Amino acid sequence: MSSEFEAHLQELRRGTIVLASLRMLRTAGYGYRLLQELEHRGLRTDANTLYPLLRRMEKQGYLTSEWNTDEARPRKFYRTSSEGIRLAEALDGEWAALTRALASITDHPLTDEEH
Amino acid sequence: MSSEFEAHLQELRRGTIVLASLRMLRTAGYGYRLLQELEHRGLRTDANTLYPLLRRMEKQGYLTSEWNTDEARPRKFYRTSSEGIRLAEALDGEWAALTRALASITDHPLTDEEH
DNA sequence: AAACAATACTGTGTCTCACACACTATAGTC
DNA sequence: GACTATAGTGTGTGAGACACAGTATTGTTT
View 1 (cartoon, chains in turn brown, yellow, red, cyan):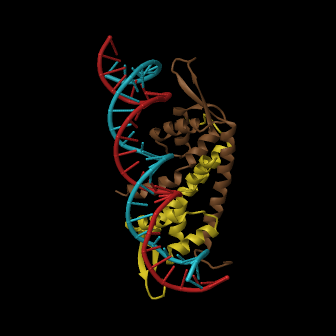
View 2 (cartoon, helix red, strand yellow):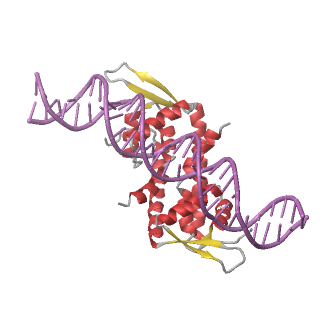
């Protein structure tokens, strides 16, 4: 159907999952839990998207991981690294800049001011 | 270098180019001009990204195009279609929702409230 | 007690998009 | 006359989202 329409909405969500994860994992947490938290906060995320994303971000050094086998069910706990915190801050700044840029477009679509 | 870092910032910008273009092209405009406008408003966009994007969006019915050969230099003018306007509105809503979701995460990273 | 759903992952393949690179062609400018 | 800016098209390539498939354990239902 209009899954193409949906795709564009998804494009917008892209990147926000990274930022949201970096923020949430300042206190350690495991994938499945994070998935539920994101869902709960309105950030629809597919498990098949989140798990590879977490592995990728660990490989890139933004997250660290550790298996917790103390409890019956083994869980892989992720935590945001100092590198990850820096990334999160940069993403915060970018988000704010984008918000400003988009707001300016609503006001005056096409202008010639100061070219 | 930290072009991987940059990549994550780019991921966040993704989708916003679509929204910005849809808004701006409510009054017809051509690619090169749009490119400068986006740049001017702080939405760094590569020409090799924008041109294919415009063609894609036209193919999907969100934009219409028309060659203007009246003037010396031929230009392809794009305009947001009614379908495109609907998409822009949906993207607006999504953006607002994402902003709210992200804001809620800054406040309390991991909570158990109402599960 | 067996069946089933929920939990908590890993691994591989496909498709789309961003962007690089390579072009074409015209309008001004130095 | 060379160079830069303008205004595009066309064809890669690599990365990420998500589908699909599979593993294994826990809790619940019948």
